[in-house]
Length: 193
Image (cartoon, rainbow, N blue to C red):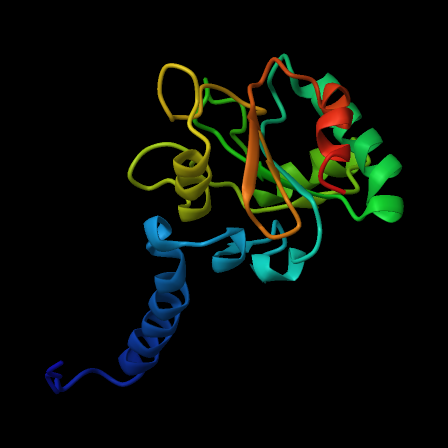
């Protein structure tokens, strides 16, 4: 590796250093094809904190893309909260929700608006920063999820509230479409507790 020394304006080196640290932090995420589990990724919480997904080790996880203005929103948010109430404490279930605006613009707001909505819905599960789940700029975790469990008629995410079940070893074991309500996943989740 070769380095080029440049004469830069005062303060510019701090910007480059910050960019380099951010790029290094993301590098572990980018190569989703070599990932062994979700534990190889990080994600940014809705409050802006970097969360290593290895912090979910030994927990069954339900990972879902969410939107606040979708026809499926009321049922899904209500039932995700109910699943959390029933299984988080007793069985260690963790729900990781990723807002996404790729489906008919149904999550248009920024983090503040999403947090306000989540507070009104009394969300108890983990909410992350808004991401893309499809395309070249999709979050690497979502590229990995789709690679591990492809969908019907293609691996891409078709709509809001696609759900992935991840076992205690961080392996993707099931994928469920938006039409599957969270309450219908109880038997599926119980296999992995």
